[in-house]
Length: 166
Image (tube, rainbow, N blue to C red):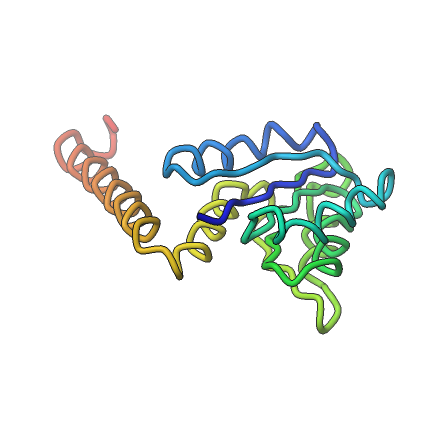
């Protein structure tokens, strides 16, 4: 089964990205998490992206804050799908990262999730890999059924105790 490669621009992105890692572990999808900066170690970053497919990866999740060039730099070096996760930062609250990731030039697409949306990035990566993997599709269906059950439990509780006591 193909794996997911998670690349963060800094280890300061890890607290956000843990939600994505946890989801991939929950559904049993193998991944590797790396720190590699598009600005500080551009050769390493390019090599990771260029070799990702040969190393058994099918999707790359790239997380970056501020200028957020990492997802685009990675997308320029591979034909694998790249999912960008803009990381909230002090200065502009993550809008700078969101704009930098979502405004890619024609020919270098990066799928983009919400600011700090690591879990959705992992879910999207799993859905991409599930296109050719019935077992992974089943695990995703189980996950979505679990979410639905949780919503029903919350509604049931609301109906029982009312909004004042919820």
